[in-house]
Length: 266
Image (tube, helix red, strand yellow):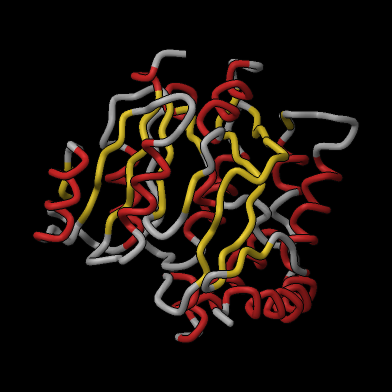
């Protein structure tokens, strides 16, 4: 698999103290890829990192919200496959190699994603209730050693109780998906909403069961801010009502709120 076929488009925002560590993890992959910094908040800080690591910068000058930033990043590289890398997270060295291997097993794959663990402060958290539930849901959907799920029913099955797909780990097959836009109507759950739309397209979802991403939990993250501002709760309700009748959606909405504790830095 040639390196030009995959690109990391790093969603760089303001002056994250974790951005350089993220970049280093992308450059340490066993299969090298193009790395592009994508931002709607250009700054000397980001420019200096780009110069230090000899990386191109793409600037979204028509910023309307996080959805437009993600859409711009998705379109920022001509590569066949793209990962929208989150600036606070770390990608283990085998991430690209394992995802490309999985994509090569079935031509009509839309997305491939991996398992993950969390970093809270200096502590690595390999499991908790939220992660256990997500892994259980995925294990049922991908039962009998399946690596891909094709049917609309199975794909939606991993999204009915919330999103079991860890967004930063997703590698998109741009040739198979084609042009795609993230919704500007969501600020926290735009990934969950996007997966629901992709369920209606022909093609499969693929899962790599190894934890190849370390997702950093901290108070300044978009998810944590969304929880504090009650944005996530409202977005959860809207998406559950797309999937379930309102009485069931209301119950799931209340239960899903318990997962918020996992997004608190301890």
